[in-house]
Amino acid sequence: MILTYKIGHEKDFSRELSLAKKVAEYGVQHKSVSSADVKHFGLKSAISNQILRKYSRSKTAKSVKSVKLTIPSQSIRVVEDKIFIPCLKLSLPIYFPRDFVKINQVEIGEDFAYISVSYTDAPKIPELRTVGVDRNTTHHTIVASCLETGKVLKLGKSLNHIHHKYKNMRRHLQKMGKLRKIKEIRDRESRIVRDINHKTTTALMQFARENDACVVMEDLKDIRKTAKSRRKQRYSLHSWNFYQQQMMIEYKSKKFGVSVHYVAPQYTSQRCSRCGNIEQANRNGNLFQCKKCGIVEDSGANAGFNIAYLYRQGISQFSTDRDMLKGNTDTPKEALL
Image 1 (cartoon, rainbow, N blue to C red):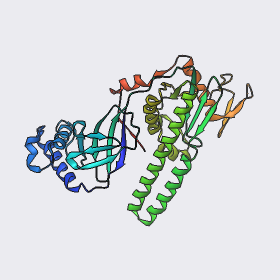
Image 2: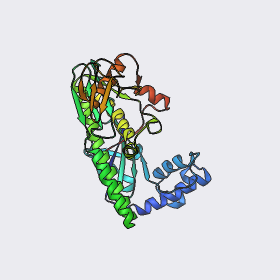
Image 3: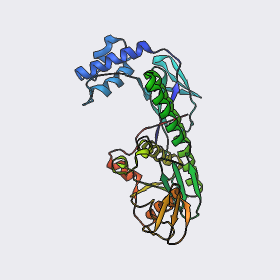
Image 4: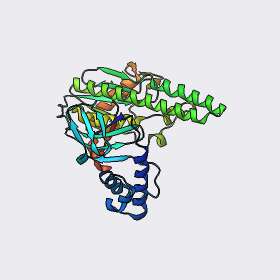
């Protein structure tokens, strides 16, 4: 498992970043991979090699906008609770867990350092139970239902409020013509949403681990193209960050030793989880009522139980299978401190 941690370095590397951009531009134009060809720029060869390797071999890069200083593992030293980068005379504190296998590389930007770290995957817990996860655009964004115990965990209720709060703020600023402030508001919203997603996905993994359960989710690929929604719900659908949630759940599953599976999303919200009836079921807001058996429960919890039941019927797909179809089995993910 590879995680990337973001840490502020509080140093001025404007000169080095300017040189790195020139090296990258040279690599794009001349397709050179030798640091000797860019020695005249004055950038350290360890950093030049990494930049050339990235931009010279790229088949799509035609121009360079911004470049980070990339330091390979060979040029990094770890002493006690600090990371030393001799070529930049930089020392970074280690705030993240120390049980890592190695530090792969460090990328230095204007304000932050991005540290790529490898961890050993946790041993898989036994799949004695099943937790079905219903992801929503409104109300609770994650509702986890344990099929065998009946326990329900609801998370992320504030996200929908945050999206609409910042939407109204941007609309007001748009009328006033304050475009720079709009960007600041958008960045602030993104940071708040990412932080909430980290907390909710961690709570979900802990819930699954405590119950010795695997996690089952709907495969929501192309949901924005296929979902039918009313006009007032379109903003919620298009601001829905289910993919970010999914990526966090997948990489945290390796950390907690929890297996992740996927099922088709059809009828999981319309079917009664007790009797399986679809035709006589009625969903009203956050409540689900079945006219056949009379059950009334939270609509997210009902969908979660249906998702878990579909997996137990044998209709599923491993998250590792999905990764292999995409051509990647261990994509680096960014983790907040």
